[in-house]
Amino acid sequence: MPDTASAPAAAPAGVSKTDAEPKPIPFIDLQAQRRRIEAPVNAAIQKVLAHGGFVMGPEVTALERRLAEHCGAKYVLSCSSGTTALLIPLMAKGVGPGDAVFVPSFTFTATAEVAVLAGATPVFVDVKRDTFNMDVKSLERAIYTARGLGLHPRVVIPVDLFGQPADMDEINTLCAKEGVWVLADTAQSYGAGYKNKRVGNLAEVSATSFYPSKPLGCYGDGGAVFTDDADLHQRMTHIRVHGQGKDRNENVCIGLTARLDTIQAAVLLEKMNIFDAECVERNRIAARYTALLKDVVETPVIRGDRTSVWAQYTIKSKKRGAIVSTLAAEKIPTALFYPRPIHTQPAYRMFPSVEGGLPVTEELALEALSLPMHAYLSESDQDRIVAAVAKAVG
Ligand SMILES: Cc1ncc(COP(=O)(O)O)c(C=O)c1O
Image 1 (tube, rainbow, N blue to C red):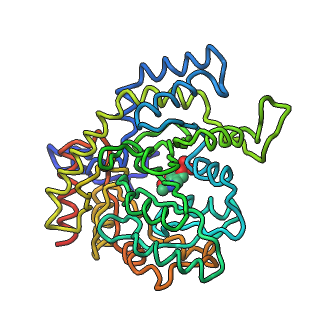
Image 2 (cartoon, rainbow, N blue to C red; image 1 turned 135 degrees about the horizontal axis):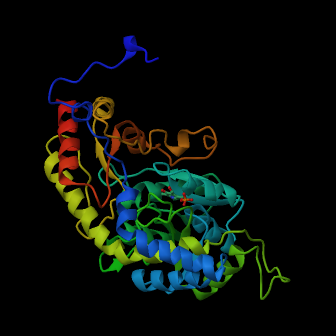
């Protein structure tokens, strides 16, 4: 028997219940993308199922070649995630105890985690308020902080946060002067440009992620390392498969199981066919957000000499709480990246930060808020999001 006492009230004449309720807007619409490429992706997966080369099948090599052509790096090593893409080069370069690895604290955990996994010490560096990326002056101070602590400055891991390349020329110049090498964390920025180059080709080594929500994402975990250094690439190839040498009976170093599945490579090859066009769309949508929101909240800043792939569209507002709740009431999701910066986390509190601390990071942790962003966001959905933000800040 239906419980009439708790039955919902009838909608007014002419208004169905669904008309009255706002339609949920996805934060990232992977289904819209899937509908566009469903047939070729299904065919590519079927092909792998038929040939049966699930590990290091021909699609893996084809993807590595395609990525190298796309970004201009000489060597590409696909691997199991963005995290292993960061860890493998640290292992290959012998980074370990006593070494300082300079990382922002305003980033995803993996950036600092790999330093600890390698046995080194992460040293936290502050970021710039306008771009969210590493502050080179803070990095310079952190190198002195590390030396003062008796650590050996070894690697800088700048992060291209939310899709925009960090200040790579300034970072590369400072690191060359200080004898420190650069591992660019491009997990959020593959596809972006800097001066006349592409991400993947802006540092001695770069690492990216193909996690599904990334601008170029697969249907599971995946990643890649980019370099022009043939020897380093060779060592990383060994590490990807248990330190294996010329065959499975020879181990030349300590390694991991860190290969990219062939099925994921097949999916990525299909996604690469539409990736550049999707990046154009992401930029159009981001520009429209900025035009509509610039007088309402602090909108993201992209430097004139680079482009972003808009992994996130992130605003800043002291009224963040009100924006989150107003949008939630209208079925519009938001995301907080990163409300608890890494240096404040229990697992990382014992590691040093730059002298003078991380005031900008701590400010951004309270004010940054990401809005729905993907290549298939319609103007009508975007108008709803913008109107809700404006309503929330009054
Ligand atoms: C900046 C950054 N670095 C590293 C990673 C790690 O990538 P994965 O999740 O593929 O291991 C991520 C993923 O979210 C990231 O955003």
